[in-house]
Structures are given as structure tokens and as C-alpha cells.
Image (cartoon, each protein chain N blue to C red):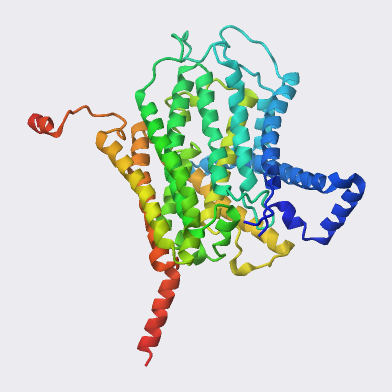
Length: 386
Length: 142
């Protein structure tokens, strides 16, 4: 089990050679410096890729919605309008930065920073492949839930600090929605922790296999329901439609970021799109087998790692597409319906799933339903064969 | 976990948090060089559909949000305490002590379930709470 990207790389000869040359150059500080540099390069790589995916997410959102509504969508900047997000970024960079004169200026500036920091923090534990995980923390799930809720704090603070009534309503809604839906999400992730017996993402994915019947979602009926509870909760936690009440543009102007302009608004938008990718990645890792390649194709070598990354991104982006499709398909919930859905439907369902998973492990020795079906069919075959 | 577990694994966390902060601060500072800066009285007023803002937004607010926050804290603490139990369940089950951990999980969950049942019964999960004093008066009215 590789704990970090450094411990994965350190099994290669070229890394050992690099380590020796660093040790001879910098003495005792050499190995530590090399570790830091590798982490730094890995982090910058991940952040760059994620920022690009976040930008392309806005493009995909507009293009897919255009497709669903029989429009063209962005098609002027670059081939098929692919560079639209760069043009938008440049435009927002050049926009005037307006702070309302009655706002709480310190918190107003702090909120977009917290949003981006919270989302970047979650990237540390996202399992891209068995080797390329920035850090496979032993408290991975716990850490992700904790640092991910910084975004909720940012949304509330942004709404509060603007001193605008629309922002205040949006921020309040955002805070209550995010904390409410955290409960079903945490409880359905806990069922997966129960099944795999570990809190780190390597362990979660390692307990699954490459083929669909080895994924946790198809392990037993309770995890199957649990995935949908998780997915609905994750939609609400990232403020995606039909749960986009904090920024409901038709009733709250634009919710918690009404007063934000230019780059500050861009950071909120970027944080939202990266967060959607992160929760899709967590869903893929916890329920859909994560980076596991069918039949373990490619083995442990570099080809295997590339295949694993591709499989992980494939599953995550499929979920991402689903999230965008849901946004342009369903109408927004009312605020009382939102709370009813969370506390009266999803939370009892999540508790029921948790008990079901615990009993399944205890009574049925954590065999998946396909194993039992295969054993049953096998015994039928031998029984009726005489 | 291995005995050699060091805090090195938290290095990417620190780097990523710093990268997030640096990105925001650097973009805002660099943008200062190129973006216009023409503040005016009406531009800096909070948006209220074109009208002069009436009072401040920091005023009384719906109690419901506060109640939701309280319910959330109970659930969050409970689930945070349940994670360690959930992690060891599989290992304990393999050595034949699963029943003990299962009972513990059930105790935790029964506290959660009784909590949500109490809130539900009291009407705290309804967004608009009904103020019918008891069932008898309700029947008389009906």
C-alpha cells in the first residue's frame, strides 16, 4: 500500500539515483527537500488539471444545456468554443472589483479565499490511481468531509458579509442546506467505511474490484440505495440544481454572490465546479470501484497507472455529466421541500442503510449478493444434475 | 497502520492550502494593475433592485435556520464518534467479535434514531411548524 506519491515513486531506480544526488548536494536536508519538491510538483499538477477541468466544466455546462435546449451554445472562441472559459477568465480578471461600502470588508475578502482553500484541500486525498494519490491519509474520509465543509462556511460568510438582503438570504439558505445534507452523505459514506474497514481512500478502493459486480454499489441492496442517497446529498452539498437555492437566480437575484464581481466571483464559480468534480470522484471511489481496472489490465507498471487514471477520470466525468444533465432537467425545490427531503427521507434512509450494511456483514459474512447467487446457482446445478 | 507512520503525508495538505490562498491573493493583487477603479456612491451600494437599501441586512432572521443548526450539531457529533467504531467493525467480525461492535453501533444509532424521532414528533423537522396544541383539540375542530 502506497501512502503517498513519494512512497510510490521511491520504488523506482531513477528516484533512488535522484535521492542520492540530492543527498550529496544538500547533505542531511537532501531527502526532505526532494520529498517536498515532489509533493510541490504533484500538487501544482493536480491544481492545474483541476482548474482546467473546472473551467471546462463551465463550458460543458453551457454546451450540454444548449444541446438539451436545441441551441448552439458557445462556439466562437477556439475550436467548438473550447477556449470560452479562458476568455471568460480574462474578462473577469479585467473587471472592476466592487466592495459594497456597508459590507464587512475583511470577511467579504476572506470568503472566496476560504471557498478555494477548502476545495483545494479536498484534492489532497482524491485517489487518481494506486500510485498517483497525493496523500493517502489514514483519516481520508474524515479529512475530506471536514475540509470540504469550509466551502459551506465560505458561502455563509460571503452572504453575511455582503450586507445585502439577497446575499443574506442566500447565505442562510446555503448554510442550512449544506449542514443538513451533510448528515445523509456522512451516514452513507459510513456504510462504505463499515464494508471496507478503513477510512483511507486506498483502502476503500482496494476493497473493491474492477468489474461492476465487485463494486460496492452492487455489493448488496443497501449500498445500492446508499449510492443514490449519497449522490442526492452530494448534489445538495455542492449547491447544484435542483438544490441551487443559495443562488436561486429567479428569486434571490444571484444569492450569496450577488455583491461579488470580477475575480472574487470567479473564485466562487471555480470552487463550485471543482467541488462537483471532487464529490463525483468520491462517489466513484467509494461506490463505483474508483481506479480499479477490469481484469487488472496493465498490471502495477506505468501503463497500469495510466489506465487507472483514465478509468478514474472516466467514471468521475460520467457522474459529472449526470450532474449537469440533472441541472437542466429538474425544477428547483422549495425551501420547505428541501428540508423535508433531507430530514424525513434521506436521513432515515441513510440510517436504515447503515443498519442493513452492518447486519449484512455480521450475518452474511460480508459476501456480496453475486457471490451468494453464484453459490446458490452452483448448488442448484449440482443438485439437479444427477 | 505501520509503526513508521510519519507526518510527512500531511505535506500535500499544507501545500494545497497554501496554493489555494496564494492563487486568490496573487490574482487579486495582479488584477489591481490592469482593472479599472472608479468607485461611486451608487455603485458601492448593496443591490436592492435599484432602490435605496432599506436598513441593514443584518437584522432578525427566521428561527428555523437556528433549529436546523442545533439538530445538525447533535447528528454531526454522533456520526463523528461513530466513525472509529465503524472502521474496526470488519476486523472485529473476522476474529469473531462482530456482535459486540454491532451492539455498539446499534446503541449509537438508537440515540440518533430517538433524536430524529423526537424532533419529528415535536414538529421541528417541518419548515412551517404547526401550532396545534394537542390531537384532541384538532379532532374537535375537524
